[in-house]
Length: 273
Image (tube, rainbow, N blue to C red; front, top):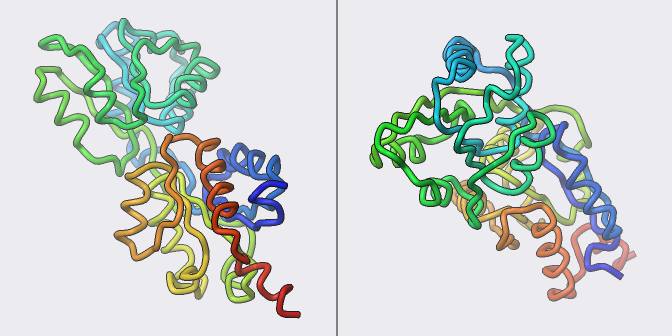
């Protein structure tokens, strides 16, 4: 029996990404509760992205950096809209954050990554790159991505074109989470990004819920950055995966419940009845 058997676990990922985590949870006999807190939309103005992609098609860059799977999806859609060949992004250096991003880049764009650090962070990527003075780097990211990576690369002597590839917006649909929280029918809530944390709290509040409603629910986060965001937002983080992957998150969550050996909020009513 898995530590997740019977556990009701909220999946806050975007609709196009939720199934991967949901499948991993089902394999451990948990019940995933889909509650999309983020979704992906094109930039409000795609001109800078379009110009960068056209430049790439004309050999304007030496290096492409892909920091997330969402970036890969956004580039695929925009290249298609512009009728540009996917292989225009195959550059001497293609750096990626994480194996999932690398695999998606291969599957969707036919790109072979040349740099993938062991640590699944943008800073680890910057450290792993061999920056040559005046190296021309294309860095497409989320519109809310911080400037740390671009600033680090620029400081090392690179010429960085940092463009918005997509926007992260609040998701919709899924289960009636406020009602389920009120009925103690949720065991855990998972977060795979800082934006998911922010949008979760915004969405929950808009649906007459609040952060206090999850005080007794296990909070599980991928990696230190997401966990830090959750903590800063007033959530008590119980599980933080050491590896920045979904299988690691699920494994850590299962281990947490196994080691605690406690009755979960969702099951508490059954024990009392």
